[in-house]
Image (cartoon, rainbow, N blue to C red; front, side, top):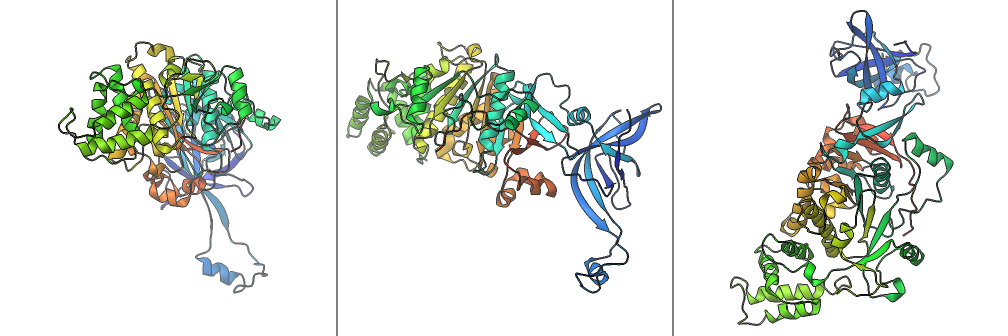
Length: 562
């Protein structure tokens, strides 16, 4: 392997020796280097006379001089004269501290003092990071080194969407359009590279953000398109997309409740892409234990996700719904109200007061337009969630709009979707074949709503389902891509089961709260508080280093204004 330009040499001192995992080197005065740059360092031979190289990633930079203290520097400037020019400049140099990633001959010995330090080449960088010989690479961005090299960084599909490992968590402050943009970039990479294996479900949780993901972004420049090609991808929006909107009794809005502009919805209707989801009574009524309709009782409990129920009396009321004969929501509400009268039959442990509370909640929380009966006509384009998922196939994308709904209904729809997918993968639906769905990737922003770190009784149903997804989903082919502003607000077991973590710009207060950030070096903590738009720090199971700083392309899909 030919020698390259030397940019510095290793330094090992009594107080700061080199080790098997860390190395220090001083830099030539004209060299500019940054944290996360990779270098190669000459090392001893383990194969005859053939020289080996170790590869290291820069963690921290410091500048030292021969001054004994700051006061000495003050005195040497003629006791504080800012215009004074010293006769002799102080001796000084920049010292880089780096983590050793590996060696070309697998030599695990400390690098010796005086060894040459050189820039690592693109292929050497990919090899050192562990992304050179992946079985099925999925682009995750690219890095730009201080010597102007640009290198694509890939994830291994088996550790991204299973079966070896799965799930991604993306965190970062809002306002930079980084979390959602990165998630959409990654989902586009999955669609382009694994079109025959992966289907995708997106939740639109803020305004009209994800309601035109199949339309091209008119703001993309040639430079933006080149950034996509640096990652080995085509700069195009998502394809084969179906949109599900909340049903509403509004003919002027195509019977749709949404923040999307009318012209966007109308175009999607003309392309047979837009439908309105609703909930009929049968979706929620319970049946025999373990049956498909038994799932409805769990879904009904999502309506009360923000209500404390320490005695589980509402759960008992929900269980009783299986014995009620009602074909419409109004009839169901009447039958429940009838149980508020004394002397009614039913479980003795359910008091009249409990039925009255349950009746009030049912009446107020099922008045939204999405609780309706099926209308047999084409103009309303009504669809049950289970039917929309039944039609999903690999290469297809289902966008579920929940932004217009109140929080408790957002939890209902989110929980309904993930439970339906999970149960379909367990073969609990006769009309859905698990192999037809492929590997299902579910993306949701504001994950803290659904799996909070301080999970109490009010969160038990939805949080339990999310734990099922993250703990068992990879083997079944159900993968969660979650995003949130604060990692400290997410359930620890949900985070712990993610094989890939993506860190966007974060404020210093959050760094002190989330346990994950405590393992960051001071340099990494400083980096994560000042990341620019289009930059992320990545952790992934196959990487040979804890963190990689990457850039990712400008969104290729149309971003609707709120």
